[in-house]
Image (cartoon, rainbow, N blue to C red; front, side):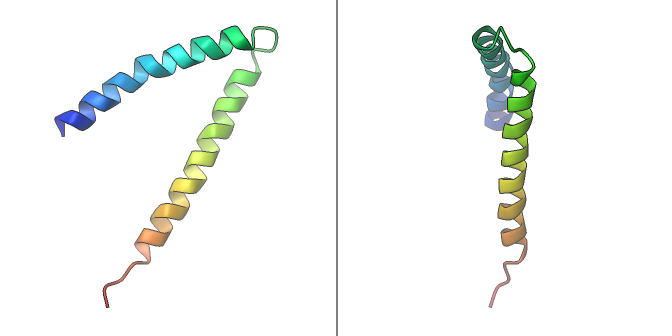
Length: 61
């Protein structure tokens, strides 16, 4: 459990660094950064929903 908490604590500064790099890269069009982040989030959510839906239908024979 402590390893998971440790890993989660590392993701926040990494995410902030990625946002900073993205805003530097798309300085002329900053509205693209949240749109791309939303698209990535939606893609991950769809993939996770499919994964857990398939795992939920698993039954022992």
